[in-house]
Image (tube, rainbow, N blue to C red; front, top):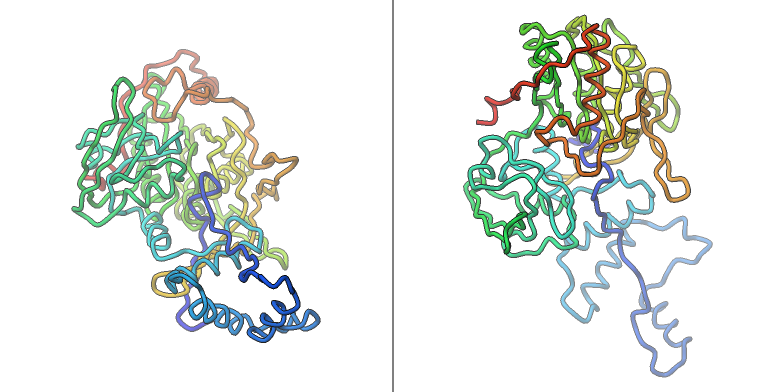
Length: 446
């Protein structure tokens, strides 16, 4: 391993949802042969490039081959060649595509920077959660006190252009890249809003944003049932979940719902620490298996255990991935909680992020993970369909039009089922009203 290279084991944030990859170069005949004499064209190619014979192809020098092709492009391409960094990055993308793994990928400077921001829980932008939508990116919600909220951006708005650049056929990941920018700079969003006859233009001044991590809701005031919505496993997640649980204990909470719906994952270390809050003793949280077999078993940290002594339900859906699946699987295998909702995404692979320079990195799938009981969670493609993931103990499908940010809780069938199960465990069949939301990281967002 090269000197100065650091290894970060992480379960990366964006599983397959809306993620696009550049899959290398497509080769074709580069010179026409007006004489119709193919042997002359073939001789020209051989004299210029002196290709390696098929029986010695295995002895190719990758560095020499790349440099040779690069030199030929610079010397002979009829137009202006792309920038050297573009050629290099695209060739690396092409090489990695041959692995056949969507999670093994190269991170250009912008992507590497965003990954570092996301895992640290802080970035510069407008402060809005986005999701894919036809023709653009839909605002799930603007964050409290964010530039987006102050500028008037609303949940349900569909951003169709950023600084005049259309988002038609652009992934939400690319839309986020366009929206983020230097602190105090401005971005103009063209927004399609229900009830408005024409698109609106909203100018927003970017600022430092704290990533949403934990929201706490008192869902049943009579029976003291709380819900913790954990939105990602960044560096702050364990402390924020611990704070939320201590506050619930202090306020006389009797039951907890850990909501991992739409949580795409995050840091492996963060997942183990969050599981340690619920799992007593030193028990296996996740098993890591490499190509040579079992690499490691990561265990809960007894010093983090909070001894809640109350019934717990975990909510999950098809967007609960990687670190979310580790925590949900560990809590079920150790009989700490039951799982309610839909099959999880099924990302049972571990990526090691290896910096290749100060500005770039490569994420390589180095292992897969199993739950403590040995369940392989990684989904497979069978007959064109994704099959796998963690299966809930109680399956409840969500309505197509329901969103996790909707304030009308009666439409949330999965939440209502969780409340029903917990009331039965508390011998409290009568429902209590819901209270307003509190945010465990409200002070950090301001």
